[in-house]
Length: 184
Image (tube, rainbow, N blue to C red; front, top):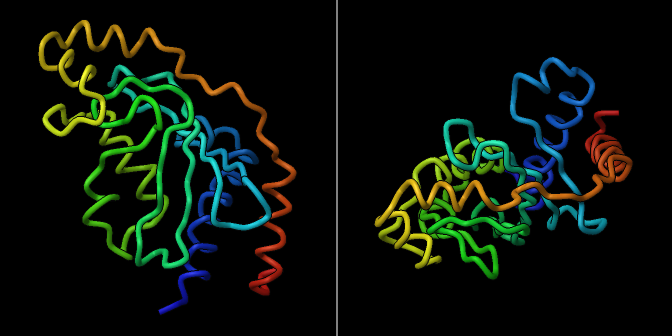
């Protein structure tokens, strides 16, 4: 099995390559989830991913900037995931953006990767909130008391992250990684 640092690089590169493919083939971009990956520094352990709310949910149309930190022991230890811009959700701390999600916090497995986080785990969290295990007690109480009012409150928040995406940095990172793996 590969080392944790190689696995970190591979998982991040999957997201970056998906982003590159989708930006080159616009029709795929429209049909599939799009990822914007924004590096925090020159390392590959901290970055932001722009995440779109799932359809058929009150979060549809929203775009969140998710901060991802990969620990040195990744993939054996779970990534740290947090919402940067505001989201009203029972399982997300309103102040810190921390996520209460068992698969990330308790039952993480090295079989999971970052694509699982953004294509399965986070969409499921937004589609099926768990108000019985809240980080945001107000959102949980409102959801249990009045689902319609909860959904109106969710839709009333500006969920669009207004930031520029440094595409050149991402492309530079992709090229450096591809060269380091002798792919180029």
